[in-house]
Length: 155
Image 1 (tube, rainbow, N blue to C red):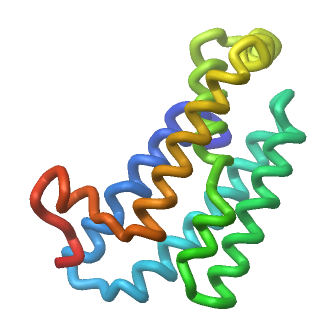
Image 2: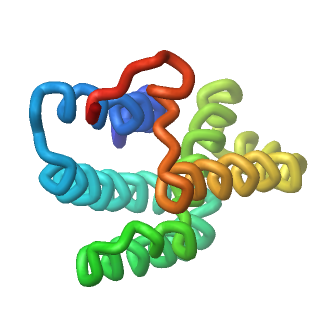
């Protein structure tokens, strides 16, 4: 993630999407999976923060990191996933979008100017995606693997 931001961030996202189906299908209990998943998420957020400190959007990254970490801490204290509905992970999609812009433009100053020029579009994508994503994962408990593909690792 630190050396190749685009591939690291998007690869991390992909692994986070499929890890549950893989680990649960191998027999891991849901409670063990949740603990591992949330712990590895916490580590990935730290790497995102380190990466984001290099970029012109560092203040936003620090705020989003802090906001999500409050949710992570509350989850570890309470064990209740509903906290993620209130402390959503806006950090990851913003980092993924910014890394994509940076990869395309090959210059951080140009990436930042492009981000500023399209800030409403970027944040519309981040907000709509993450509010929907956190809702279906932690409130509605909809299993998209089962919904779209007819199978899930947990059942």
